[in-house]
Image (cartoon, rainbow, N blue to C red):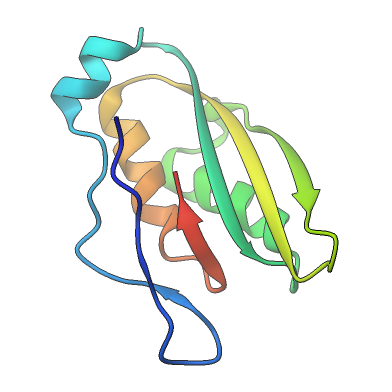
Length: 112
């Protein structure tokens, strides 16, 4: 249903590549009720408060009204974390704004 955002592995720190293909506004309107809950998954390097930076990116995108809740799972090696972020999205535009901020996080490898 959604395109996977690819990484570029030419540097020691993977970075998201462009162009980013977020769910379209039409698809979001057709598959979700707004306002309502929306779930993001961000996988990245487990360092420098990665989970907190994911939450901060959502707050930066749309403000505290998104009421973020999150869970974190680490890989067995402890090298990577998967952050599942659930937010209250007021509109499809705000979902896209959050995606735009999430892909900017240093150390983010995959955003779903």
